[in-house]
Image 1 (tube, rainbow, N blue to C red):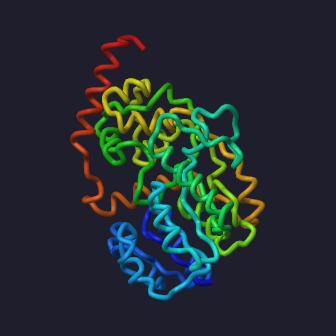
Image 2: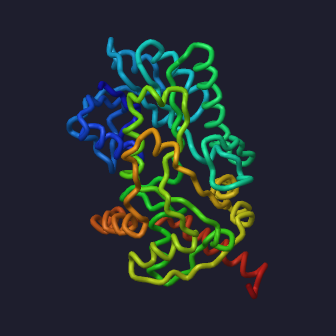
Length: 331
């Protein structure tokens, strides 16, 4: 099959690209040629264009058509509208990468299924993804545009440490400084390795049964935020000094960090993956975070330049901890 990925070298898409070529797909990647930490597979055919510049995309595509087109970097309804204009009549399937943060927040019941209401009153990122989905559902109903929706949750790879602050937090652990964990650290979270995600995702490419359907693809491993941070500490050989700070206080000092917490990570999220397992029978997650975090630490330590510290975030962490301890001197 002939497949087009818009993007293809990001956290999620890099593993999907690699698995797609391993399975024999004729893979095209449309991007600006800036792969960074995640180079494209040598087998992929590169099309240089900027999806935000439709004319450059038309020039790059020529008269090509595809069995499936996947947009990994569409975030607003206008982005989706551009894709509709570009790919009507050009693809047998269009896959939109949405987000599991679009589900009802906080969820009224667990586990979350694909039929759980989409409703996030806090995070604009999530509301934009919901609006994108609504536009695609309308396109499917009105013109039978062959869309499929995929909702990843918190997916990581060796180059991305899935805690706010990344290596700056590890650096604090190694220096014996306190680190912030939101809430009381006991909310349950789901982390998914990008190679595990790819196994479910690639099985949807060109899958006629997936047209008009939505799927989330996540691990079945559940961890508390305290456990996540302790596994990070164990991977670097230290026991982290955790300070539990209310998400609302974090948001008061850093609204962007706060939106990601109050609109997503503050609340326990457990996913029922039975649907993707029905549609892609060979999908299984085999990489627990205890192993995945070892890959992350090894990747960062392979090059000192990867272990940079965000001085502003480091100082902000001290400021938030001090404010919390003043307000709550004897937690």
